[in-house]
Length: 424
Image (cartoon, rainbow, N blue to C red; front, side, top):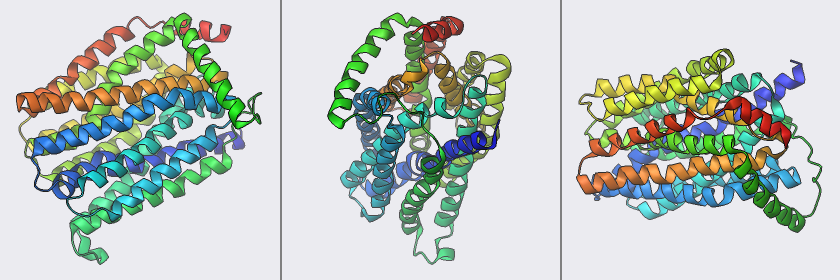
């Protein structure tokens, strides 16, 4: 691999280092805690859980609607980097604005959180699509895993600093933990913006034969391509079947990521324990994601996904029965071993069975289903909790999603998918 190729791969992977700060510090970490204790002060735990689940679902619904069209639009104009920049700016600015939201203003907090989540989630459509611009062949598994590994390390380092900031605010001249959390929103926004720059400066996007056409012309062509891709999905049955399987099992993964801290608080665990457990997941996830990339190269991405789904199924069963904080720590370690692996191998597996010249469009569908899953999962947990009054039953329902996803994945023929993609 030449030095320019290595530089591009590293710059691409560094974006995961950048935006994972939002995924870990805000989405999985401080926002659920701060929302429940500060912005929703006076509300019941069940109500705040429902509001948070609804906000996650609303953001995901917007991405579900936009992702395929945006991906197609990027393919038409060769604009994956430009659209990634647009949504990165949206996410960064909305995250920074959370600093200004006062106590009890849960509606404003949710509104900004939805905007930031849209920026984060929609940006991933174009970031994922750029994978085929910086790598190919057997290295797809490793490069995809490298991105997630950078995400775990980068997100974990900032999160560790922010946890220290909230535990010892007086060391930094801040009055209390609430002030420290608010500063964490600004720090996350700055981290996201700063470490995104290498991708925009160094990654070379493949020039589309349609690049340079006008905005209106690109929009019309994108709609035509979207209709054509929908028709192609009827013929690319391997891709369609994998997307259905992915939709089910990634639903479980995303729900656990977004709702784990809230679930732990509903069981009465201390928020400090939950933050430290989440931090542990990040640092375990860094080497594990790299190892899963190498594992995918050795045994195949599909077999690696099987292993990860099996582990997640066991995690959900254990989580529904846990009683002590030490069990939450143990589960954090187990999740860290497979979370990045299932995400990175799913991405590299999918990249192999789609036409490379339509990567933006096909990754639009890929991320659409991932976001659509994120609509259903948090709402499922919220409603089961409301109807049953038991958070344990709500987390147990997630096991069904992993079981169904695994069942469908058994019927996905990778070699057939590759042949059909090359024939288009």
